[in-house]
Length: 218
Image 1: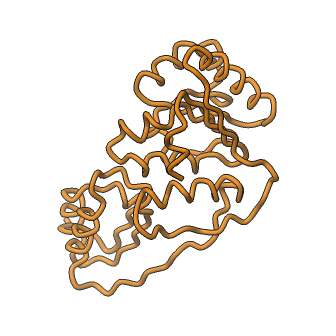
Image 2: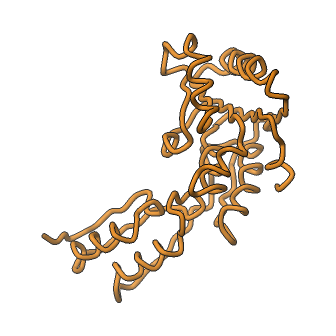
């Protein structure tokens, strides 16, 4: 089968095989492709770029860049942009259109104090914002806080504990990122996955962890 028009969203996450499949079905089609390489979950984004070019063949390409960011406050996005520069070379960064006066907060604590610090911050965020709050963690930290904060997750519209990859395409009024170093080290996409998480927050962003090594790299 072939199509007259092909629309691809989150294009940065398609694998080379998926691009080849799309290319076969869209040989005669016009295309609209939307994506951000800085958020790619594919281990080698350059492979997907090459596969995309192959899928498009000799079609004329017209590129448009989004220059305004309406999701994040400027304070959050300016911090997230530092991670984007680790994610890929020369990322396309938009300009956030609003400032809230609330800077991202970062806290480094010993593991013995982590549970209390995380619970206190979750309760604080729930008190400060009217909408949704997400705690984002991976690996052992995800399992730990899914268990320890189970009493707060009865209303999933207000509070959720999520794996980084599950947050793609979502947004929350406040985000608490726990042990960011684990995300960088464990996720295949490393800094790109971290960039995704940082840009989920619309009003408040807090990071808490037992190591601040990742912060020293920004």
